[in-house]
Length: 72
Image (cartoon, rainbow, N blue to C red; front, side, top):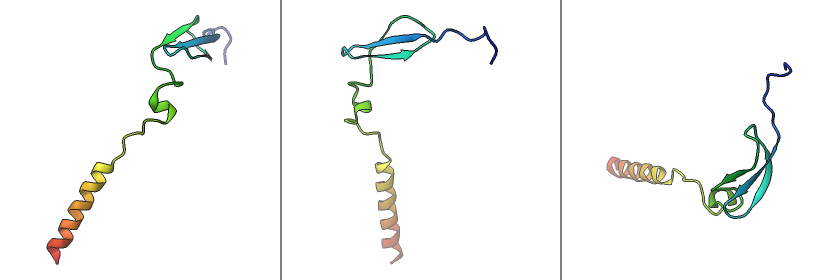
């Protein structure tokens, strides 16, 4: 890598609205304040599940059963 062309990448303290804080590196510099942090957000803590394709699978199963019943 060439010297002198990359921005400074200092440690930054990130503060969440919930009061949690952690250190990260950022080119922005200074402290950062975020509304959603990984300490309390349900998606990151595992309390919220990612959406699955369960509805599509159930529709496919119903269509398959109907097709099998029609062929009998």
